[in-house]
Image (tube, rainbow, N blue to C red; front, side, top):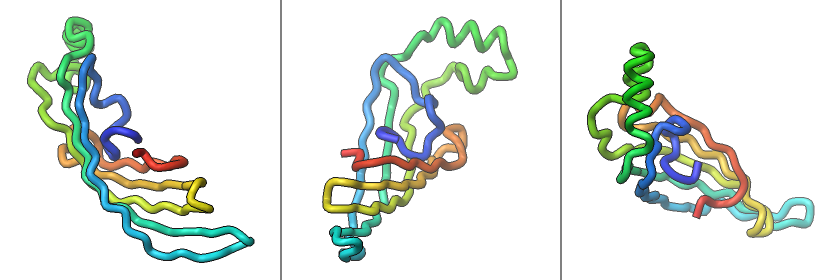
Length: 125
């Protein structure tokens, strides 16, 4: 949820990694309800990440040989490159401090999954 939204959980593993989030927050409406200040916003986003140092590469290779049906998931033998996704989120904000967030992301590469929904509290940054 806090890295590359929409990509399968634990899809990008490494001893070192880098990621970037690009997001545009757009205020839709402000209103008062039950004596509280509320705001609804939307946030289109693009996220990307890359593994800079592999994690337990020897174990991944051994597991891929032992379980060939999972080889493409465990270890492909090739550099994975940049993992990227794009999506849309919505925020319900109460009094500027309580933020309910729902975000849907879709990865650009089908190996990273089909899509994913994240629900949480607060902003990711």
